[in-house]
Length: 436
Image (cartoon, rainbow, N blue to C red; front, side):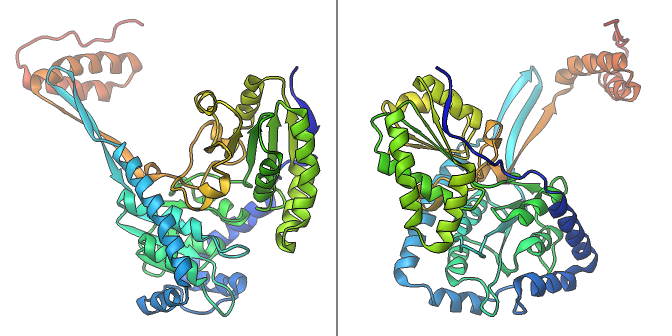
């Protein structure tokens, strides 16, 4: 039957970021040239903050004392789950070696990057969970130094719960600075910090553009766009559960797409009838975002079979993918393009965002077709090594010399020739290039 759009998006996330790119490029250039002073100036301008940039032990202790005990317990619960999951991920990376040919050993080993910079949003929402997700994984990976930065609130500084979560997760330095200036300070090693080898964490379009601009000079987790979510639901799904989950993700922002893919017209129509009232019941700030996201970016797609549903989902490659349908094992085995998968109504994207242990820094805008989300692996370099006996080097050197000469790379060939001449004096070798 193909796809039938019962509701189709009228907008697509804006990809024309020319003005943002120019603004970010200018800020990064000024901060790199002006150092600490320029970063402070931008913090005063954009964060309206003139307090200490690097938090002292006393600052951290004072902030932690302000966090209610129940919230501390919740943060510890979530951080423990993230840590345990990250430890499992790290255990999946094992150093290994093999004898490629007699006398030639080659292997790989995993090495964590030295310094990580973790961005923790703290403007519109205080992203406690982002502090847990980014810092904990870097700590488990074994990074030597972890800097966490978060936008301070005017006259207040960083939200105490973010400070507590960041400190608990293992940050070596907590920096009260947000936006492009915070990213720049971590990347350039300002305020006496080691320059970050990798920048991770979600942020607004300016933070995302700063990371994109710096990519190559430093590593980044991914180039992120607006968050997005897709739900696969069959006729047995609970319409209210589906509708609430759609609305819960739409509140992220005015341009956060949410999609429902189903093989049940009745379910689709009931969900569409429920969503407006659920949005209207949200607090004003959340309501405004959810209304715009659902109106302009929300889609409801009717398919004929579950295979068509799965193919549609793979084409969208959503950041978050929820399955509320029968035969969950089939869906888990069939689906291939998503950032994180939530199987059954007993779990939901909000669980993964906050406390299940899997990471919520995930690929957006279809990037799940080629990459996964933030994990311990993002902080690890998989490097290789080789070692040979003289006898083991012989066939390698012969092949290298002939291939190099065929390619016209005589210098490469001679680095093989000299070893053969030294290790096997008096012997003759056929080291000429042979026609392709």
